Length: 102
Image: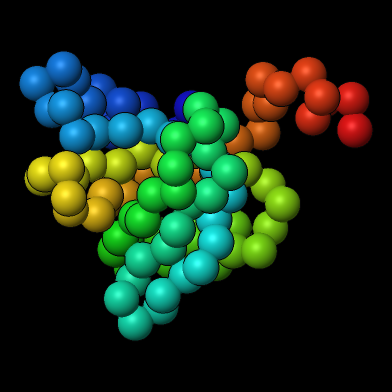
């Protein structure tokens, strides 16, 4: 596990109810607004908007339009705010048996 992902996971606790770890596909990037939409989320949750810092641009561009799923760790101040990316990586581990067969 990458140190950044490990560090981000350690920061998430029950005292921060607006932190998430979601797996989905990166879509609809807004380069000016430095944000993207995570779709087809593995848990069945609705699409989520994530803002990111320049350090994550390469990862976001890699995922944009890709059929790969990405694990995104994010946080937000309140329920109506967008999430901010704390860590992002391609999720090579598929828990869906149908995806493993193809």
